[in-house]
Image (cartoon, rainbow, N blue to C red; front, side, top):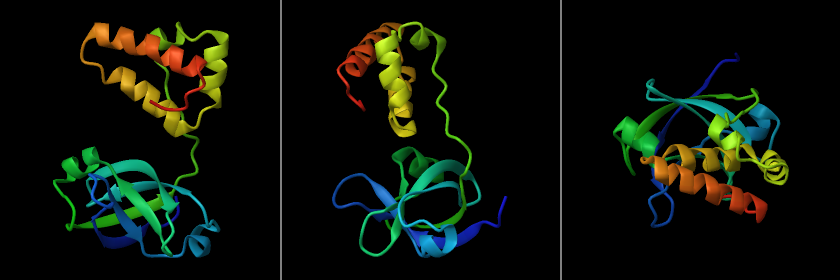
Length: 155
């Protein structure tokens, strides 16, 4: 692994919605040879680790999104400072499809699912796995197949 890139950043709110990010204070082209999205592994405040991406959202710099779950785990919110360590993530990102979902995927639904981005695949599977009741999980699996057959990329 290469040396991590370290910086401190303020958690910023995206417009007036409950979405947060930090600005990446370096040039991604200089560091990674990329102007667009850069997949990264991140360690925040030396305690919360996750995989994400630096996204070029305009305004002259890339941003690192912070989900509500990440902020809650950190105990931080908009305006707070965090310590960021990140590395370029060159590992393939794979979503494990639960067996009960694999059994429902007919060839057409599976073909469309396989064509989706990592993020869209992850959203579908997380939606199913987050069901608290078995009947909710069953309903969501059926709905997922319908949405895949209709060509819907996301939930």
